[in-house]
Length: 217
Image (cartoon, rainbow, N blue to C red; front, side, top):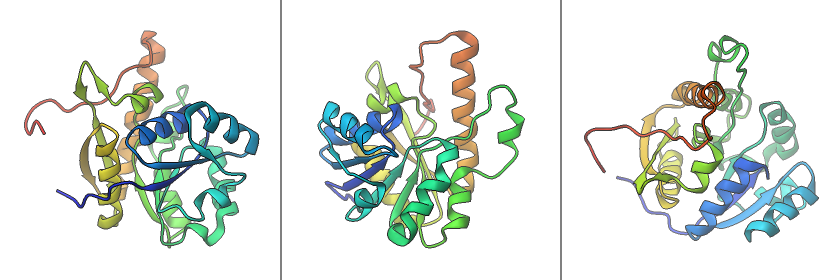
């Protein structure tokens, strides 16, 4: 379906639950991972706990990375990309972020996605949307009862998207090409729905997305 890239050199910006969960899965799959965060000591602590490398800054983390995953709160995106400047030009940047408002979902469901906003502001970056729809528990273990969950990927640059599809597959998801970057709006809606369901039903934050029916692989 797409080219196999093998071991990737990946920078993960964000050392919270999502960043650490992704780092664990990527390390398990054999990728090289460098973590960074707004506070260098936070990145160092998280990296030590999971066996990854830590960078003293986001700029240092992305310098030699072939793929960059952004896993920070929505209100930190501007600071992250202002700090990176042109360092991510031409790189594949995976947006794993969400803008959520469980009290007023309509506020965030009617606008463009975070990924589209990044692409508009930074046209030289190859933005791909993935992982945001998955809870941290499922990023760390992308299967339930031995059944791989679906890893949806959206983007306008096919080569960049193929690379992320390969990453998604390598960590244990069933990779699904969901189409152009505009579909990131759907992904962010999926994330919001999952979060609201966990809260309203007092579920254990373990659920994931799986399409049932053909094709099965």
